[in-house]
Figure 1 (cartoon, rainbow, N blue to C red):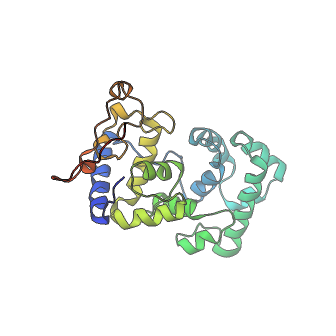
Figure 2 (cartoon, rainbow, N blue to C red):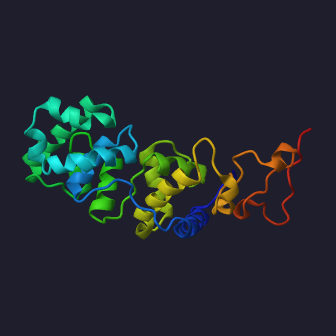
Length: 246
């Protein structure tokens, strides 16, 4: 992929957001929650688990546990049984209880909105902290989850593989007002169209903005014809094409 200036990448990033907004007007965070505390617990449960399964569990869980004190007031085995369907339930139960204890000790039982305060909580990393800040507090934040990480690389918005470095790349090319929405759009597009193993490039609304518009095998490729490049990828006028080896 040829070098792309920050300005050009930023322009392409804004076009991607605009196009995906039209394609996925219902894009939002898939986890169900009513408070920052519920979202914090849901995010801990979401590790190595689908959002759908987490929502099924929390639909019952949040009727029983309403505050940090509730998670600390039952035997550990009981909490483990209540969250067992999410997998890794022993580790998650301990993480939830440690986080609840820290909330009571340091923040009077309330989930803080500041990034540094969130990162000081047991088991809370930048992804969880940023998803909380963006979705529970409305603060501009980029929560780099699996879909945001994968699609940012596939769309050529970042060449990094470390989530923190991908976050830094995205903050340089996307307006702050787009950060939260961008994450929602990447999640929905990644689940519906740009699948990890079998992306639906033929129906993708942003193929023209993608450096790999035909990642899946097309009929033209099977007959030896190269797939067309996206508009932004084409060579400058007058540039001589490289000779193809035989």
